[in-house]
Length: 182
Image (cartoon, rainbow, N blue to C red; front, side, top):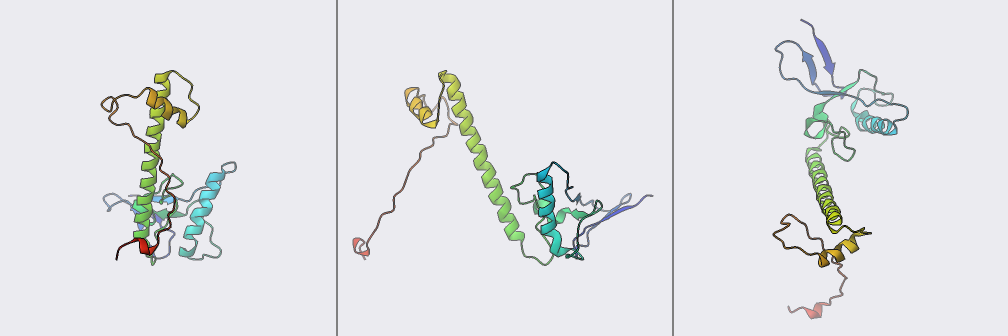
């Protein structure tokens, strides 16, 4: 029976992966990103991981990960790393002795809201592109689309999922307390 064993590099993290037949639940372990010449984003990601982990390893002053250094999934939001640079799990952020679970959940919720806004924006832009094709005209900008939208207006029933965008600019108003009844 072969046994391979992986340890998490974080000081105080007792999670060890033991691959033996019939032995417990498997935990994911991740390698540190490699420094690849010509891939500046990988070098940057490696530095971000090193900076995040540096204070939680055995010898933080001299520490540099090698090809065998691993970090377990428990140090990432939602127990899984992400390849999206804006995702809270792009860099490990959950460490022993650090109260950050609430902040990690908030970061994940914020990321999901941003992604939803991006998806909605993409949907609106796709609709504008489809309007360009329907109208068979070259449209320079969104103002032109809005003007043409009035010319070629269709009923709500034709496009029930369309999104109406309206920009409202609010100006600050100086109010005096004498204007309000007490």
